[in-house]
Length: 450
Image 1 (cartoon, one colour):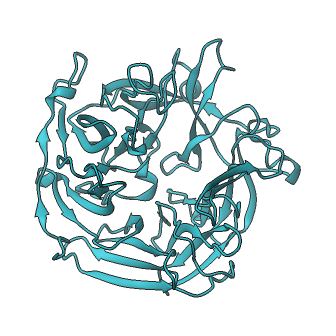
Image 2 (cartoon, one colour; image 1 turned 30 degrees about the vertical axis):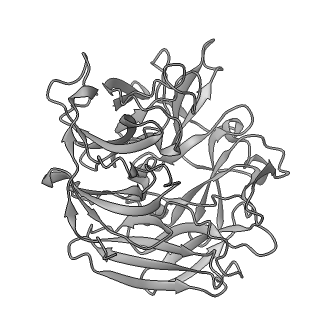
Image 3 (cartoon, helix red, strand yellow; image 1 turned 60 degrees about the vertical axis):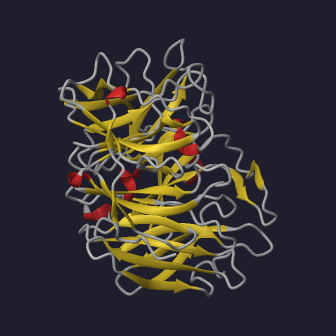
């Protein structure tokens, strides 16, 4: 079969069915993908992973070709470029098997991505780039020998799905499996100037030792990465079975930490999480030196609330590094504190850290079908910064995607916002096949006044 890379195709149709009584009157909703033989999705909160071009005209998402057929299984992952200004025209960017970790270059001209052949008889991983105008592909780096700092060959075929690019575009952060007799994982850094790679260990027996780069312009933090410490050994084992067990630290919930891209622990932690407080979907608050996360809480009111917390990483003593919310003297702010019952799950922030789009988890929890489970509507918010009090969010309903949150993980709505804050992509299996998502987009909305 000839390659379809670079060939334009079009599936977008208007989707007025998602409008509601309280929608913005000028809002346009579009179903961007429509071939129901293939699943399609935008990844969670990929504002952190730069899958929009800086001019907001194009975006990359994933299609799982064949996943919508009875025999399709998970399908073949294909990274797909969407030209927003050309009526959401689509272009396939990859035809290799096992593609992972896409990220768009800082100038928006190309996309870096990995091909994970770690499960092959001669294991290797390959970093490639594709020009987003000419669709010319180039192999940049092949890693088939022990990685400096890790001492092992990438092996096992369990590379993480995301990558993160440093603000100056000179380093790329990923993570992958380095299996031998034990199921070890490690962080991986590529120097894009000389195409060399090295790694370091952070929770070596956890499947996601992946750090995301600080998104701002302060040179003091250019090489800083945030990591979530789960305090559990969990991942895919060498026997192909999932394992999960405490790691012996005695901490029951996730804590957040900052390392540099040499793997050096900077002695910095975020005053969120640890015992009694969940940490879910932590990301940088735009270009600010703050980490935002959502957490379910019954401590702030007699009823359940799912809040957005934000805090700057702070220097801590060794004995305090895993205390999270109990780090002595540290400050954090609940941005949703003026809302009686906030509902937050995935959240995507603009570069200024003042505009957000979020989906909602709902009372019954993920994976429980609507109407009993997540209501999963989308809302947008503006952060009010005033001299009189800490910042807080003013929210506004956007729309109800009516996705089932069942079957594929990607039926979770997972909104992603363009840099200019004018386009939001999201997932839904409504009007499609239950459990098999398609990609939708909304434009023409206005953020609430700050």
